[in-house]
Image (cartoon, rainbow, N blue to C red; front, top):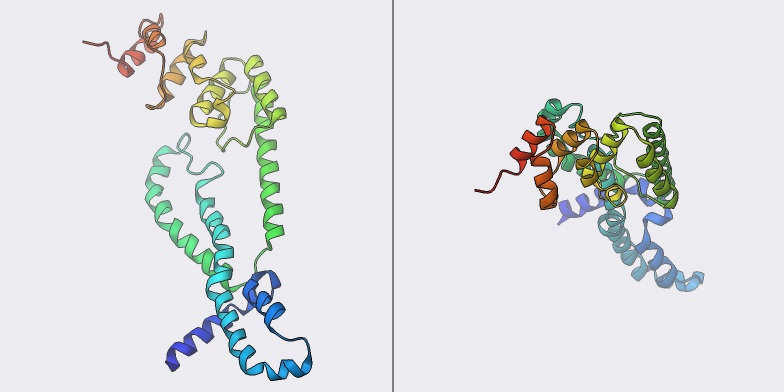
Length: 258
């Protein structure tokens, strides 16, 4: 019993840094506001009850309330390994495939380390985290808007990040880029739409299979996910395409029925 009590006390002391912030101790705040008398006389009288109650409140904050508060932030820290273009299979397929087991293995370790650290020590407040997220979202929107501008100017570089939420302004830029892009730009828009449901709402990948440029048709066909359905008449049109590479790739994807 003594050893268990010492372990609990040590854990509570380790979390002391986090406990210094009022927002990190909701149970203690509720206990202090509702059960601790403000009158000095009653305060002294109630000490035999409030002292053990306060200890229980500290333990509850340390082991239950505050860990629940930081769980989503710890998950966000671990998810960093999988966002912002990671893993980049388009440019570094073999190295990313080799590192994939390592990335998968260290994800729970990263979550656990962040979870324990945030549970015991002071990190950014919720307002700070919210502001940082808003800054990341604004930066992601700016990068995507810049990429759309490059597509309109004839750029053909792939976009390796997740497509941000498309509001009306960004949606209009997508439509303009789709109309003004050359073959390289259209190819990148169609290929990105294959992996992004947000962009797919404005850019239909099947239009890439009907594109006037055979390289665009072949590229979209080559990247077409198995789960994406293509109309039977379009399948037949591609199987009979005038360009041999497109025709052969389509016949490999959709063999002629026996």
